[in-house]
Length: 437
Ligand SMILES: [Cu+2]
Picture 1 (cartoon, rainbow, N blue to C red):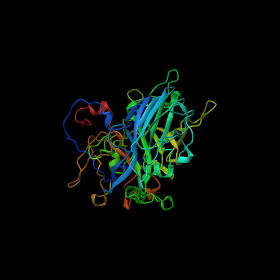
Picture 2: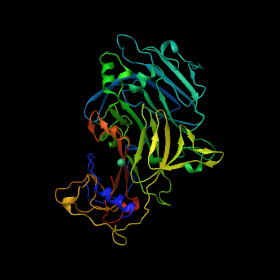
Picture 3: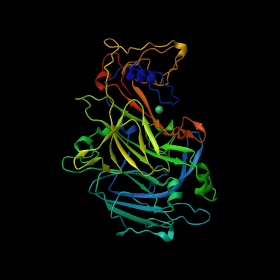
Picture 4: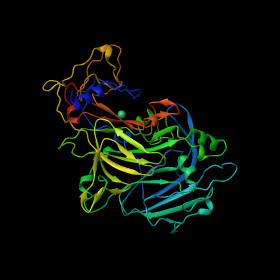
């Protein structure tokens, strides 16, 4: 059995516990691209932003609710993580922060934002300074106060913004978000990661995995005005974009996750030199305290940038293909990937050469279409259900520190998400094929 055959079989048999909305099947309509707003990065476009530090609750995958501190749009509802701030290289970015954090242990809580990777940051127009008297790495503000930070986004890439005040506690409580700077060099633009021709990607296939963790005992201590004690810190939840699996693969702005707007399902089309020539991109970000070795199944990723620097040296391409990306605390990694038909399997001209075991020995995944061929749906055995919509493939991606695939003791939750590969649009439009919703 070749490696790729093994992958096909494993894909067909993988057991999946998630739920996706099942839409009506079996009717033919003209093929059109899915609504890109339901998946992928949700940008809050700049360069001027107003954020509010506040407290709220999120839903954990084990159905607990968790008290969090986070950044939200000023005057808007609570959300976690903070808005994904998108700007263009060269712009002067201006972020006004208002402090609406509740008192903690009867005292006011000062806070701030720092911008790792950005230079010459100003606070209210003057050079930002450490505020060590208030345990802050940058200018902090008391509740009710506000401060405006500004800087020139001088280089493209993926960056973090996070609290610079009492950082162990406040970042642990959830005060972080992503900052994306798009290249503006001559001939480049928002569909490039860097000012490099080989960093071009498909704009509707830009994804983010903001990886974080939660120690519920520390959060409960803060909620109930007890001591946050980093000596006792131990994460029990791990998240992608502020959600754990299976919520992680729900759409952006899913109605049952009102304070966790960002999904992490990556939904793409196969590579095709004419109709779909450019790859997808994923921005990996680690705001936790542990390494997160993220592992997509089924294909490798090409790591092209770290911490906002393209992997190059004097014109030499230092990008590297990896089967797992180890994202260290505080790091960001930019990874491009594509799904392509390496073996050319075809149900008639080149069938998958594998003997299908007896039904009693099969475990049918919830996403299995009944066929190992992309774009085909076939009858499933009696009693088997599928959430497959149009013969698409689902390939799991997860954090490979397996103890982190957990939600306070509930296993197979946490930082798990999926790559969904849809059949090519032209194929969806063929007679007898199902159009993907
Ligand atoms: Cu795995």
